[in-house]
Length: 80
Image (cartoon, rainbow, N blue to C red; front, top):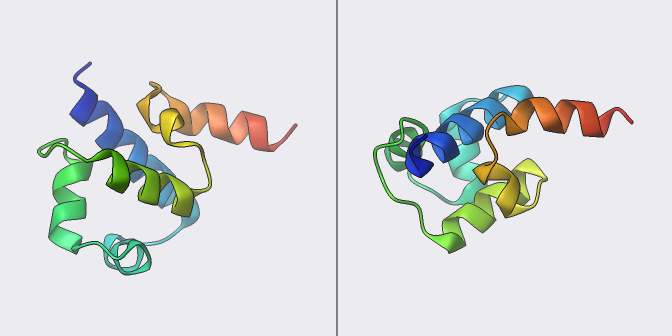
């Protein structure tokens, strides 16, 4: 899977697990909502700094956003 698409799917999945919309998440992260939407669609490259910022807000290490199915892994590991 393309890394941009993988990161985007994971960001979207975690954001939805948090129960917040793109605008609210973008505001919390200090990001532009339309840029965040493009990240979630896998349309743009994300910098390491932005990846770390997003991961911090989600509450996972940045490398977790590079794992296929990370949102499912996270739900399991949080309930142990």
